[in-house]
Amino acid sequence: MAARNVLCLIFAFTANAVLGHIPYNEYNLAEPDAAQYYVSSSYPRNTNDNSLERLTAVRSVLQENGVDAYIVPTADAHNSAYIAPSDARREWLSGLRGSSGTVLVTNSLALVWTDSRYFTQFENEVNLEHFTLMRQGIDESIQTWLVQNMGPYSVVGVDPTTYTRTAWNTLESALTAVNVTLQATPENLIDIARERIDDPAPARPNDPLMPLEISFTGRQSSEKLAELREQLSSREVSALVLTALDDVAYTLNLRGSDIPYNPVFFSYLILRSDLTAPNNTILFWGNGDLSSDIIEHLASEGTQLEVLPYEDIFSYLGDMSNELPIGSTVWLSQDGSHAVYSAVETSGTVNILATLNSPVVMMKCIKNEVELRGHTLESFARKYLWDVGLTYGHGTGHGLGHFLNVHEGPSWILSGPIATDPGISAAMIFSNEPGYYEVGQYGIRHEDVVEVIVVDRNADHPMAEGMVGDFGGLGALGFYTISLVPHQTACLDVNLLTDFEIKYLDDYHARVLATLGPILQDRDLLEDYAWLEKECAPIRSAAVRTTMPVLLVAFVSLWSYVN
Image (cartoon, rainbow, N blue to C red):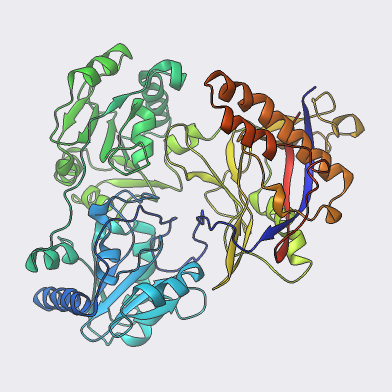
């Protein structure tokens, strides 16, 4: 019989465990204010020669444009969690291939801000003669450095498509106070420098779109658009501008492959309440021509829209700003770029409704009356490390998209509250990934994927019948593990585990074998089945023992599902 257990396990991991990603950047500095990850491109590693060549080219372009310092973040125009090689400017310039970092170039310095995951990697990959490491959370932030080191009347440049309006305003306020100008460069100066030395950036991808049928989405795109229009009407908004790639993909039930391993496509979507179909829904994509299968798919879902070239977004926003009646309101997410905000403000007569999240984000985020804040769970996840004076410098979990981004907000499991986090509700999907890292020695990351479920006295859960209340009517939520992968029991010290914890692992492995085993046998993958059967063997019968130096790490995976 299936059961849902509370898991509180102490794991002993070997020193060669695998490193993992970090789901959220907790440094609230002047850097772009979202998680920044990207797929590493295949650029040749920087050498002493090309590092200097690239910096020299960049400094020449800065001088021509009257810019004294230029910020190069890890970002694209959509505040994406992962970026395409066409936007990997920070990597090209610095050579640092890590997922997070920001470069600041002046006429004499090149500084690289990154977090603790990449301090050692910086030493190995970056030309130390020309670049200086700035340790996030230890050294001064970019904003602080600029305030303290840029002289009055100097100019700091940024590509406005790579900075959110929120991050822009924060930095601009600090610089204005010391008579330093923050300037939006009309073109990205790194791209210009690359052209100068015959090393242009890769072309922006524009791969074919893929329709996602209702059997996979559960709702037609026309229904989603109708719900959004209701929100526009209730807020008396003339236009909604969607800038996040997964927001557009989700709304239209379309997917793409413009960013490796992320089924999204470069696009913008605008909904207008002052126009009629098809001109009231405008998709900016590619050259503006959709393929016949996409046109048929949208028509089958009752969706009519106008399609314009991707590059037309800013001119369209400027024209729309001038066309809308004075006092009209345009709805933008605070994650929108400074460039988008500036285009909407062209006329100076349009109001902007800036919300923490777009309405699409909240549509994707299932809500109910019972919510647990992420930082409460963090206390459980970190407890056994805290007991011995240890911790990990990353969040414990993040939302996952439905055939969309692997990091999907607005819900996170972090060590502190996030303003945009709506809490945890039933039917959300999270990663559950505590870990521990020792620089130069090893890194540990233990990760499951879990569904949030409602737990009450009648739930199929061994702890349910012992509940004598429901937290004063608030109810309770729990995690149901939906990833089925055997844990590496070879690195466990069984003497540290309770009988309950051993039973949890044995029951979980029994479910893994019962679910995946028949599939392997049906495909005649008998060698694979034998491996799985061995990995899923009961712990005591497998005579688990530690054979290598170990680090004791405790993890909590609440209300995990097992057989």
